[in-house]
Image 1: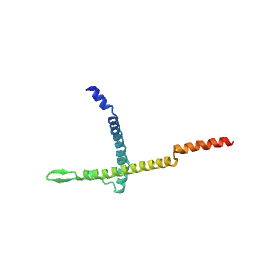
Image 2: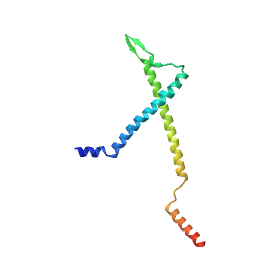
Image 3: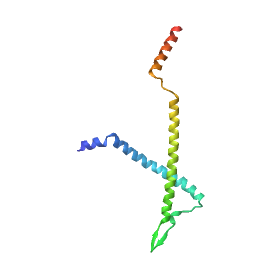
Image 4: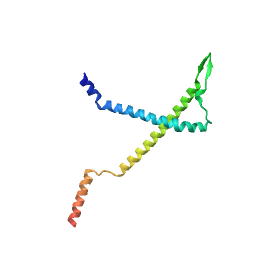
Length: 126
C-alpha cells in the first residue's frame, strides 16, 4: 500500500496540482494586497471615505449587517477588475513574445539543404 501511495503522490499531475495550489495562494495574497492597499484607498477618496461595513439594520432585535455585504460586493468587483487587468497584461506580453518568435522563421529541411548547396557553389567559384 505504501508503494502505491508513493507512486500516486509522485505522478506528475499531483505535483503539478500541488504547485498550482501554492502559487494560487501566493497570487491570492498579491491580488488581495492590490485591492486592499491600492484600489480601496483610491475608491475611498472617490466616494468620500464611506465605509459600508458599519451599516446595519435591526429587525426584531437582531442586527442585519447589510453594509458588510455591500462592502464584500465592492471588494469582489475590485478583485475581478484587478484579475482582468493582470490577465490582460500577461496576454499582451505573451502575444509580443509570439510575434518575436514568429518573426524569425525556422528554415525547412529543403531550405537548409539549398543553403548548403548555395554555400558550396560559392566556395567553388572562389
